[in-house]
Image 1 (cartoon, rainbow, N blue to C red):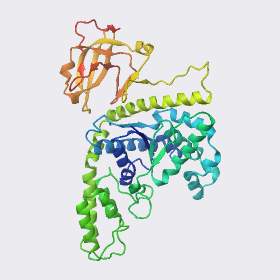
Image 2 (cartoon, helix red, strand yellow):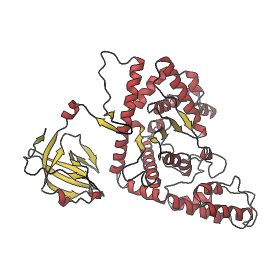
Image 3 (cartoon, one colour):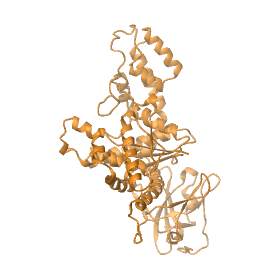
Length: 469
C-alpha cells in the first residue's frame, strides 16, 4: 500500500472553506480508500506569520475540529467511526519533535540559492518587505516542509499547482543528502488532481482564500453561508433574469459541477443559457446542495466540539504511530551522518514496530519496559457517570493503601456505573495522570476484547493492592 502525506497550516482563523475541501480534504478521503494516509496539522509552520499566543491556539483548535469533522463526517462508513479513521493517521506536527530535529540537519545540506528561489520568500520581497525584515522561519519554511515530508518516506504528496515547488525543493534537498551521506530518503512525487488543482474564489479571479474574503465556508452559520453564496460571481453581462447567460467562468456553475446533482445541474445550465432561470434560483440551489453535502460534517463538528477528550485521543493515537515511523527514519539519519558512535546511548522514546507477516505489525516493548508497568487489584467504591460526557464513567478505586480517581470511557458499549460499583478489578497503577474533562485520571482499568464490547477482568477475593507479576 502506497503512503500519502499531506498537511494544512492553521493560517487565517483556522477554518476551512469549500476550496480547501475540494482541493485537499476530498482528495485525501478518496485516496485513503487504498492508500496509507498521514494527515498533519502543520502548526509549526503557522509561526512564520502568527506570533500571538491566543490566536495561534484558537487557529489550531479550529483547524483540528474542521479537519476531523470533514474526515469523520464525509468518509465512507467503513473508513471512519467515532474514534477510528481507518487508513488515515491524523496528527499534529508539534507533537512529533523529529520534525524540527530533521530540519536542523537538512539546514546543512541546503544551499542558500535554493531557498532564495522559493515562492514564499520571493512573494514577501515583491510586497515591498525589506529582506532584512523577513524572519528566518519564513526563509527556512521549505526546509521544515522537506523535513515534514522526508520523515515519513511517502510515495505521493497531494498539493495544488501553487505548492508543487515545495515538493521539488524537497526532492532537491533529499537528493543532496543521499549523495553526500547515503540513500536514506525516498524522493516523493507531487500528486496534483488536474480537475481541482486550483479552486477559484467567489470573485472568479483569484484562488479561494480567507484573506481575500472570496470564500464559501463550511462550518459557519447558515446565514453566513447563504450570504457568501449570494455574493458569488456569475455573468456580469447578464442584466435581466431572461437574458441569455454564460456558463464559462460562472463560479456558481463551477461549484455546482462538484456539489450538485448532475441531471439537475445540466438542466439548469440549459435554462440559464436560454435566459429561463434567474441567478437567484441557481444560487439558491447551490446553497441547498452545500448544506446537504456538509450536513454530516457539520453535525460531527458539534459532537467533537462538545467532546474534547475524543479529539485528544485521536491526536494521541496518531502521534504515537507517526513518532514510531519518524523515529525509525531519524535513526537512519543519525547513523548516516555520523552522530551515532560507540558512546551513543540515545533512543527515541517510542514503541518499536515488529513485522509479523505481510500487512501486520506489533507494537513491541522490551522486557525492561514491561517490568516497569505496575498492575494492581483495586475495588471500586463509587462509580458515577461523568457530567458533560457521553462515554466516561468516573471510578473511585480503593487500593488498600490509597484511593484514586480513574476514568473509563465505555458507556457507549452499554456499561453503567452499577456494573462497576463494589467490585474488584485489575488496574494499571503507575500511569502518568491524564487530564480528562478538568479532572485527573490516575490509572486505567484493564479489559480484553469481546465479541461486541470490551470485557473487564474480575479480581474478586484477591487482596486489595496486590501487584500482578
